[in-house]
Image (cartoon, rainbow, N blue to C red):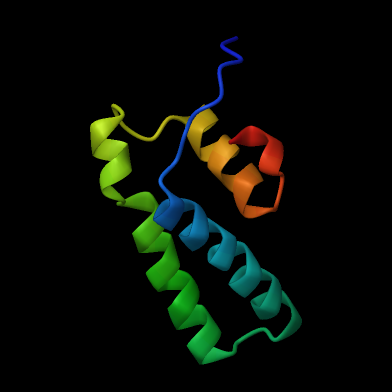
Length: 77
């Protein structure tokens, strides 16, 4: 297993952090249409960010590291 940490663009990390926050809000307020819409927009932003084209695609490990950053685990940067 490669333990070298990846570097992600700030806008991608911010989008993932916002995604996590909106997801948690939606869990507290299920069915809230503006939150569902925002979560969908953020999902598109994260999954189709140009970073993934430059780095050879979205690997499960890279997505896991990004999600860790989104949850505030700053040691992964």
